Image (cartoon, rainbow, N blue to C red; front, top):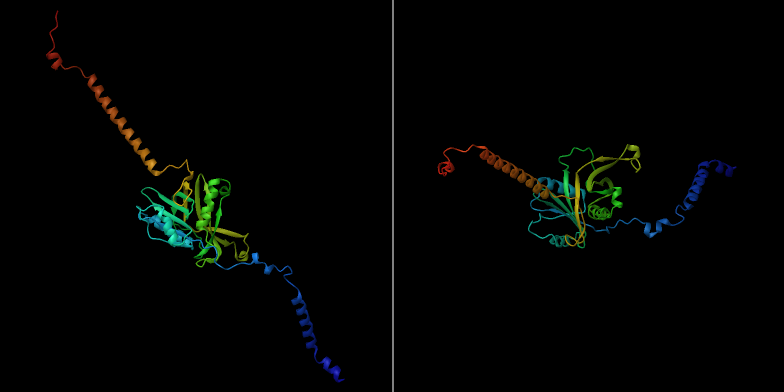
Length: 312
C-alpha cells in the first residue's frame, strides 16, 4: 500500500518527465543539416574592407548656391573628406596629390565660373574623369519636400534602364557608383538603407533625385515589396560635357556634340546685336544719301555761279 500511495501522490513528476523527454527530442533535431552556418563565403563580415573615400571641395569663386549644394552632398556621403577651397590658378592635376595625401580614391570638385557651374567627378589616380555642367539646382534650404531620413545612413543608388544600354552612360554609372556609393561597414555610416539616390537619363541630361524609403503602413515594416518613396532633396541636373581617360588629364574618350556652353550663347547673342546695329546704321546712311539726291539744285551753288556761259 505504501508503494501505491507514493505513485499516486506524485502525478506532477510524471508530467515533468514527459515534457523533458519531448524537449530532448526537439533539441536532437538538427536545424542546419548541411552546415550552412560554417560556410566561409556565406558568413557576413563586419570588418571595414572596402576603404573608399571621396574628396568633396570647391573653388574660391564658389557662389552661395554652390556652397549649399556642396553641404548637401557632404551630408549624403558619410565617407567624404573635406578640403579647403581650391585656388583658381592651381592646375587640375594637382588634385591627385591632394587625394593621395588624404587617402581618397575619388574626387568631386565643384567649380563655379562666371555663368555656369561645373562638377568634376574623377577616380584617382588612374581615372577616368567626368566633366558635367550643373543646372536646375534646388537645395534643402529652398525645398519643401516631406521626406526625411536618418543622418549618416547608407544611400541606395538606382539608375535608369538606359544606363545599361549606352556605352558612355555605363561608364558614368560606374563612376557615380564608386564616388557616391558608401562602402559597407563604414565607421561613419549606419548599417541600413532608408533613402536612395536616383539617376534618370532624359535628353542627354542626368536628373538626380533623393528619396526616402518608408513602409506603406506599420504592417509592412520588414516587407521590401510594400515600400513608398518620398522625395527629400536636394535635386539637380547634370549635363555631361566630356569624359577623360585619366584623372583630370588624358585623351578625350567621349564628348557631347550637342553641348553648347553659355559663353557660346553670349557670343551668339552679342553678334546678333552687332549685326542689328550695323543694319540700322546702314539704313540711316542710305536714308541720308537718298535725301541728298532728291534735293533740288540751289541757284547760288558753286557749279552754277562759276559755270561757263552757254553759247547760243
